[in-house]
Image (cartoon, rainbow, N blue to C red; front, side, top):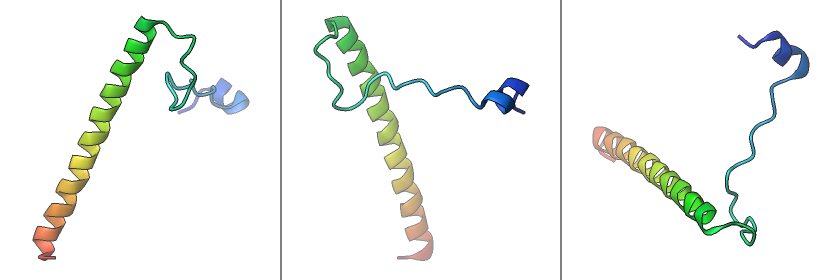
Length: 67
């Protein structure tokens, strides 16, 4: 259940993303860029797992219904 402050003031603002596609990177240091690359690689892996799950579901349905 939401707390009283959340009910009165609304939910706290969402944190800005660590990296946005196309964001200027001129002012970032090499370690900051490396950190963003690591985060983006993790996100790519997460997205690839989601694709694999969806394909497995579709293939299971196709096999069940003999599409």
